[in-house]
Amino acid sequence: MGLRTPEQYRDGLRDGRRIFYRGDTVDDVVAHPELRPAVDHSALCYSIAADRPDLAVRTDDEIGDYSAFYHLPTSPEDMRERGALIEEVSRRGAGTIVLKEVGSDALFALLRAGQGEGLEAARAFSRRCLEGDLALAVAQTDVKGHRALGPSQQADPDLYLRVVDSDADSITVRGAKTHTSFSANADELIVLPTRAMGGDDGDYAVSFAVPIDTPGLNLYVSPYAAGERDAFSFPLSSKHKLLESLTVFDDVRVPRERVFLDRRPELAGPLALAFVDYHRFTAINYKLPLLDIIVGSAHLVAEANGISRAGHVRDKIARLIAWAETVRGLAELSALRAREGAQGVWLPDPLAVNMAKYTFAHGFHEASATLVDLSGGLLATGPGSEDWGNPQIRAVLEKYYAAAVPAEQRLRILNFIGDLTIRDYGGYQSVLATHAEGALEAEKMQIARSYDPAAATDYVRRLAGI
Ligand SMILES: Cc1cc2nc3c(=O)[nH]c(=O)nc-3n(C[C@H](O)[C@H](O)[C@H](O)COP(=O)(O)OP(=O)(O)OC[C@H]3O[C@@H](n4cnc5c(N)ncnc54)[C@H](O)[C@@H]3O)c2cc1C
Image (cartoon, rainbow, N blue to C red; front, top):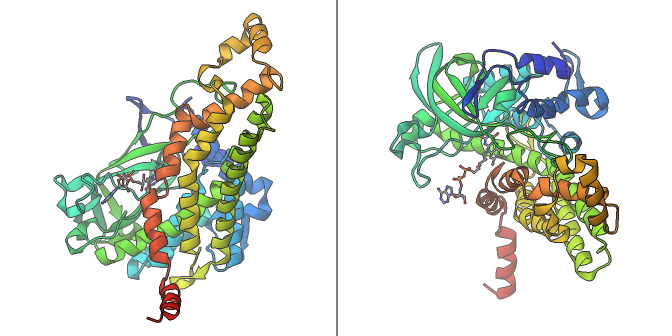
């Protein structure tokens, strides 16, 4: 089939998928006024192939042209190029993940950590995605119930997705995943285990892929950033958003050729972690434009308020730059230190990846607070687009909200910062920074796991005469 256009991508979403949104069903996700911005945002992963083929297109003798997102990394240079592609598409998407990053992360994990028939199925599926230029969502996070209890210990057995039946041709699964980005606007859903599993958790160790319109698959999409929003008050979230769902599997039948892991608990942990290696690399690269947005906004609002030369402002902006460039440096390091994993599939350096993600997430809230600090109270009390659109009121606003720059320039940067930090999209970004691609503690755990202390302890032993 070859590379698809944005329109072909949109047309592919018009099928029998079952989406629930704000208490109602959705007939056409492409046409829905509140969901369409998310489809348009994700379509950037298709339009970039025509605009930047040097970054976004690869060629294979057999397949012809295919999306570079699906190019299996086999060297540090491949990893660096993947990082550059993720950064560029995110720059077009105003600093948020766009679409194909997450599905390709899952494919790489399946190709590296898979075994036996599951690996064969993953290879065939991966090829189909590449040839059809498919859009994939990934459902890894289970609803998880009581956090201190494992899958088989929960009061309700469906709080982690599980196999409830099987025959020679298929397995049947029941349960729910949550926070699933892109599920409503992808072609296929890849399911991965969310954690390591013990011997009693066998039924829960499952991985597969299904088309979104598969019978029994129901998507309950979150209503954040709902309602109409204009470009004056919401310069970011009127154009860019993602759709996350509670993804319910009501006895979904999955043909064997689409099953990558069938009740082998010993493989669940390695597969979950393999995905995390790639997905955090995606995270730190798609965050790079967001870091630029934060530093750029700080400069512009300081200029608008006439405080650029103040000592405390220079100090705050210098700290933002140090944070942003530390994350960038670690992102580059993780590609530079890429290494070969199982089945010849390369992975980014887990230590540098997790340090970058942790540094980003840990620093995000302070950075957001700095923007609020430099902006002043108008972030909360400023005028809306209706007032700005009324010539008589606008004249008053222009007179009284002018500062070191004209009022319009000042209000536009303030609305931009408000959308990013304190309104509903800002709240979403705050949770995204903390939890998406793994919570802070998960990153710390991986940092500790990825660091071999032997050289450091040997050195101290020698110095201390131990
Ligand atoms: C915007 C957004 C998009 C996302 N997109 C996707 C997606 O596309 N696909 C996907 O699969 N997932 C996705 N996620 C899920 C994301 O990976 C999870 O939110 C993250 O792993 C945290 O899981 P949780 O939300 O269940 O929080 P929890 O795991 O409940 O975490 C809450 C707190 O409890 C702590 N905690 C949890 N368990 C334990 C324990 N056993 N012992 C001690 N402390 C514990 C955590 O460290 C944290 O402090 C997305 C999340 C967000 C916010």
